[in-house]
Length: 307
Image (tube, rainbow, N blue to C red; front, side):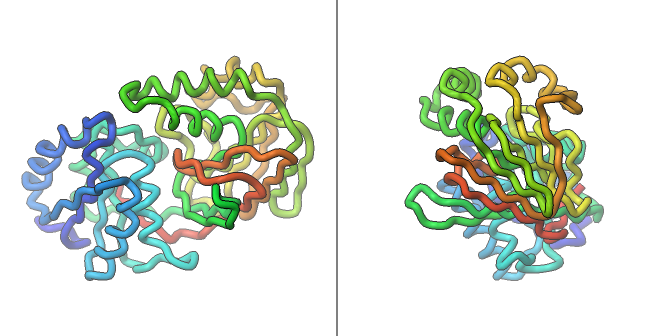
């Protein structure tokens, strides 16, 4: 039977997962056809193209956008679905099929990552409205930049790891993140942070600040285990301990068991402001954006996720 949300627009990043997504596309198509769903495929030339393609699909009257790829693809599709802090179309639906790509977004909802089961989720009419974060910071060219993020953002060591990994050769695959972690750890040390969450302020030395709407990042780290993307709040975790915590806490973070911890300050709010004396990287959904000062805001329920 046809989807109640109309034709599926499969926005595909075939290079994601070291080409795994492209290899899984025949299975994605078989599953879609087996469920009797109408669809069309749009491949991105670069992951940034997804924002424009998502907006064009909505402007053309289509409402069911399916990101086939990783967290970065989801990020850009979501940015194509929101404008001026509101949904471009209130009846639009976001589907996600990781198909072998690194995708932490789906893990918060307990959705599958393999091509067959994830594509099967696209049938039926169940959706889950979610909040989305908005981060405004100083871009690489010194001007202010603002983007929406459905998943997790960071300022400090976590973003530095991603920035360092991004400069490593692509043939290393997931090993880039591992190597980027160790290269960043050598240069990391606590520095002054000023964090304002709603009316509450924290000031001190820290290595990283996590701002979570959802819980997991693409590598599997459960960075913000108490986040829930429909509660109307952003979860803020300030890593206020020594540099060594980034290593010693790592097994706990993978399991989401790092809280409570004496060196992690927990806060919640609808607005977050992060300032530092020296520039540190800021990232959202695995994409390095710029440096503080950074403002994070909650956008209430602009996206409906297919579950």
